[in-house]
Image (cartoon, rainbow over all chains, first blue to last red):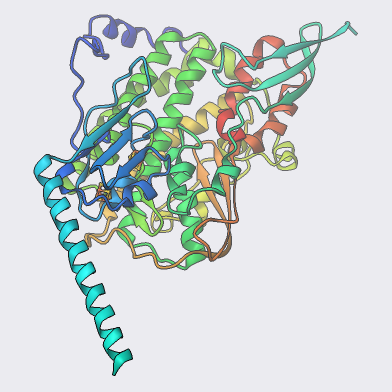
Length: 147
Length: 360
Ligand code: SF4
Ligand code: SF4
């Protein structure tokens, strides 16, 4: 049995610099690949909704018509499953944790006007093509009836 | 015979931050009976499991416990993998083993710190937690999270640990090994520590077997029970022998966990040495699980059970976890009998209780 076994270590600690950081005055250093928060490169998003269906916490919302992607950062548990599931790989896990705040609010990202316009144009063309195809079908059907 | 009275212990008690309540029937300063009650932090995991699909459930299972989070995720994934007949690539198995052992080190260091705090050795407490911080940094470096790993998936793992990171693990473990040797001698030889631990709360092998205790708590009483012997993940390829002691007192429990730290370091070194080079990390998962399985694995606190039942649908029929603390509570109450009331806090601590995961 020994007494004061820890004394040398305790003395050493007295003269060492603190092991803790003066957060938040001192910036924390996160290693590469730290799962902090989800980031989106919104213009690459195709509003498919895969991330919404994947999220175990229901933290995401996608509005295809408005071109928005919404995340409730306080509901997000930074699991990274949405990042894994996104077919366009436009979601990323970034360093830096969610900062605390006085209220729970959502972050909404909207696609840039050019992308929105291009999508609108695509939708218009698709609708036009669909209408043309429908008209052609109808015309064919009526011809067959006559014939 | 003195007058009997009942003293409530918990749910709020300075010795442990978790809510377990024990009614201590005391006679003078001696405890004659301990009646536990739990249910203060029930979170309804089983009901939640019926609302999420089996892939999402990995992230839910993982959050059962903040300390053994990795092992919870792994236990659940292995259970589903067994049902679906998936053979996980070898590298993924080794990675799982490395992460599991890293989290064992961090859990045991946390416990040793709390023990030191429990008997009033603040300096030693901070020393343990300072070493633990290095392990947490390794977690964040390799998995991206300090406590919650989120690297498991049904069919394998999501992330790889590349060569340079494996080297960082090895060099950090060397440092940790040196620092552990210092605190080991304090825990094993210091008079103040020994006077609180030696001969306190003795449980015999028969008592442990009768009451079904698990983990380091059981191994400290000479019961050779360690689920790693079953050889899940990559344990079958590593030279693993459980550490057992015959004393059955608080000192033996401390001894077992301390020695397991060195054992974990050894296992990680061995796993890194043997890790296969091929980069396959997962196998594709097709369809839904159909069947049921019991998975048993060794968490830092002891054996955990995962019961998964599925019927070919994305949502499981049932997912139930039995955590080690739950199995250890009957033995804890037996151990509390005939002890001094001043030792109760320390004795509760020596089973390494994790009440939140007990209540799931
Ligand atoms: S999964 Fe990707 S592409 Fe699809 S809606 Fe979500 S962020 Fe957009
Ligand atoms: S990281 Fe997880 S919790 Fe957060 S939005 Fe993505 S899937 Fe949902």
